Each structure stands twice: as structure tokens, then as C-alpha cells.
Length: 339
Image (tube, rainbow, N blue to C red):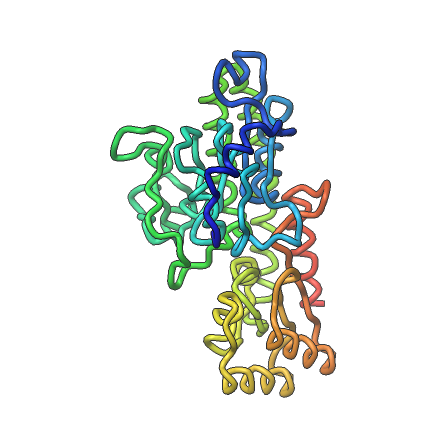
């Protein structure tokens, strides 16, 4: 976050009545006749929580508009109050939604951090997920253990270092396998908060997991069809999805990272990028629909002039769109490259 929340703003926020959130303490929760309050950093995770929780949860997504950039989002006093009153908080982590760290200070809500379920997460180990069907190829960390902190607080996690992790793509929502583990954890945590709803949460999670398994299968089939197809990825956002589909990112080293960090792309790197486009050495350009810069615009314009498809991907769901619908729409766009 660029700005800290002032004490005055927080005091004023205590007078705000939030819609879409249940009261988290003082007899709240299903045992007190209230629903479980879930706060998610973005509507991607909010949608998953709503699907798993059904009518037993009230979900608030802090970022649900393309006008808000999670990388630079300045949280409000209302956001902090929502998090402080939540029973369950879901964030992406990995430096993507770092504003959540300050919002969580002092909260006793159960916390789920999605990046920790990725097989690429730096702390992941094969041994921790020996029972995972993908453990031999996708080592992950033990998430039954994740909800226990060194001091014994079952709701705490160690979140040292919220900057971008070198070599790690934090956009894990485009990895269906990672999301399947997130869904399992959502169900487990909701059941712990609301034992009476355990069977509902498990059934909803199972139905969603089956859909995620089908999405993985679709990507596996697409991988066979598109393996080795050269594409230009302007920033890391669609990288995990492109890799799952077998696409080969041939963008010059340093281009995507500069765009993501909001830095200028080196002139030599930009010239190399434009040469790739002009020489017809890429089958498509994959870009972020929400952000970009002058260098990205030049690459996209060059691709359009060369009749090379420009596919854009969003960081957020559209209104009334489920995660599965969103992913299948992206897969459909990629599948067109093989036609």
C-alpha cells in the first residue's frame, strides 16, 4: 500500500455499516443466526468462496472492478473494517495484493493465501504433499500445517516479504490445479467455522473441483495441440495459462518484468520485440486487458498491422461470471490459435 490508514479514518470507519458482510464476533456466525463473513482481495477468490459457501456465507470482494489495480490499490477504512470483522479472509499473496497485509493486522480471521498452494511457491516441498496425485511433478506445501503459526495462533501465517518473488509468477488463479487446492481449503476452513454446514461445503467444493479437473483436462488436450507455438507475452499475467496450453513465450527477456513493474522497457529490448513481430515469428500476442504502457501498445499495434492476433486477459471476473466460465472463455481464445 502506498498510504497507511490514519487513526482518524479508522475511527470514522467504525460508524460505517457494511453491506454484504456479517458481523464476525460477539455471537456472530451461524451459531448466532448470522452467516459466515468472507472477505476476498479480488472477485476471483470471492467467486470461489461464494460457490463453496452458498447461502451460508456473505462474501465481500475488495477489488471487483477493472478500474482498481491490486498492485497499487490503496485500501480504505471501509476495507479495513470489513477485514477486521471477517471470519475468513482470502488473499492471493506473493506481492500481488500486498495491501491486505496492513488490513489484516490485529485480525483473528482464518487466512487463506493462494500462492502457498502453488507447486512453484518457494517454500513448497515434495514431502509436504506426498499424497497429492501430482506430487511427483508439482511439489506443494502442507496446508493443514499452514494454519498454525509458531506462536500457536491457528489463524496466523508467516508472511515475511510481500514484494514480488524473483522467478515466481504470482498470478496463480490461472493455474487450475492450484485453485483446486484453494477450493479444498476454503471448504475445510468454512467447515471449521461452521460445523453444521460441513456437508454443504464439501458437496459444493466437490462439484467445483470436478469442474476444475475438467478444465485441467481441456488444457492438457490443448497442450498436445499447441505445444511449441510461439507467442509474445507482454507481462506475466497469462503466463501460467499459456504454459499449461503448451505455448512457448518468445518475448525478449526483461520485457514482461519491466511492464509489470511499471518501468521503461530498454530500447534494445523493445527493438528486439518489434523485430519478432515484424518478422512473423510469433503466432499471437498475449496481453493484460487492464494494464499496459506505451511499449506494450507499440507491440500490440505492430501485431495488428501484421495480422497477428492480440489476445487479452483480465485479472478479474466480469459481473455474474463464475471462475469456470472465465477460465473456459480464456481457453477458447487460446484454442483458436490452433485453427
